[in-house]
Image 1 (cartoon, rainbow, N blue to C red):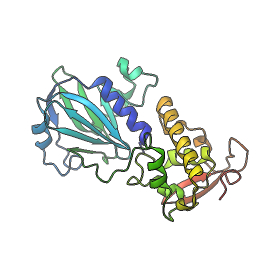
Image 2 (tube, helix red, strand yellow):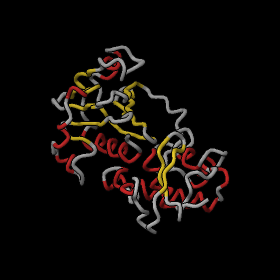
Image 3 (tube, helix red, strand yellow):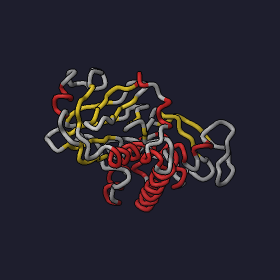
Length: 268
């Protein structure tokens, strides 16, 4: 599932490759992905407009135009943004900005929403599972502060409260936005904090350490190509050992998600 780093890479692709281009036509006929809009409603708002800025908070993206319309994009469980056959994830190291076409392996039958630009290029939401969302003027009222930018004070208040397990609190998008299952495990492992611990029991210095590790893990994942590149992620499996101390990794379900941690270093 795309988490903050994948969505930031998608936003950066939009910024590099889609801004300054005028929209000639829109395919918004997938009524499920474009709900609650009727087919043609998004097209009527966007056709003739130019994309001027790309933004993100947590896993939510939106693009402003030179008119009144704001286009909201959410990748869902498996969505990808494709611009002129380049995508945000493959190939790495800026090759997408050069127009490399490794992303074309996905069938275009998975294209759920398409902007065709006046120059003939296209912006596509490609989504095998059809769980992405496209909507005008997205409502971000229930989305917490962005995990990559949240201040120390806001992080303490948002995460260090309540009796919910720390991992569940960290993944609550209304508390802090952008952290998914893998980024949570990576950040807690780096911070040496037990994911089962009640969030409200953490001291300020522990919350500050978690924030630093979360920001570092996020930066690394953006640079390397996604959350799957984390240091502990390859060891989230049966029979694996902690890459720092060698203790057998432990597994449980926390907040409805499969969770892995080091029982030696991540103690209550």
